[in-house]
Image (cartoon, rainbow, N blue to C red; front, side):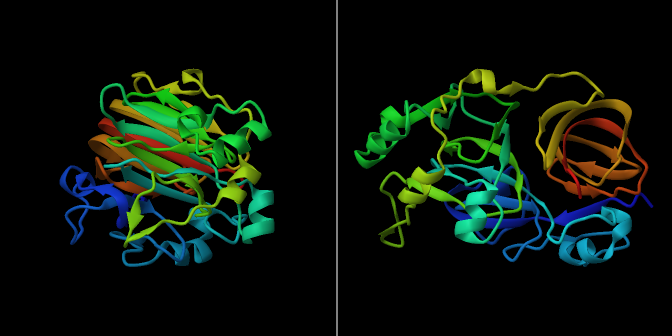
Length: 312
């Protein structure tokens, strides 16, 4: 047996969501639209991923995290550290920011949130809203209070295959038409700064202005230099991000290659199909590679994203 763990995706309804997660990616839902997020590897109270085949079929990720040192190692922490999603933005998401660990622990009783985006698809001339154009904190406060969003918002052009990391304190929003893979710390603490004055169930969604002003980084004028344009190098890991807690790579496979797996990792098949250690995999599937597997032999024609929690 390969020991790889496949999981059943969980779709989440969102006010800004569309239908592509169902129609283009084949994820199952009783809804035909409003499908904004697919939580593909998750271990929290909102979604606890279920293994779909093999030795652990039917078991939840939370149970395996507690019980299976062979998969995750003896030194793992109390909580599963990562959350992986695919997002379909039919409309703009709110302009928002995530706090760092210190602020989140003091004010929310949880860890902060780091995340990163890999662009799966986007319109021609697409832009993401990342960073801000305020000169200092007083300038930031005035712009927010006066709702000078066009002055505040920093726009970064993107195309398919681009990657960007979002450190805590970064103002950001996904724009209409963009579909992306998100790897983040397993935290849901989000502060909304602006939501286009739209209504949900007849009421505006909650904003978090003071918290946002507390945690936003200034200055934070991000440019296209902050992007990584992932290449087509075959059978060679490309490091995309490395923080004290998370490492992320992309891998374009053609034919066959082998990579070392010193610690458990999450693999997301973003394009194509093939096999991993003899297990058939295809676009839209997401797996955990156990830390005790020794290594991973990948065969086929596909694009794979790999994410590893550092230190457990």
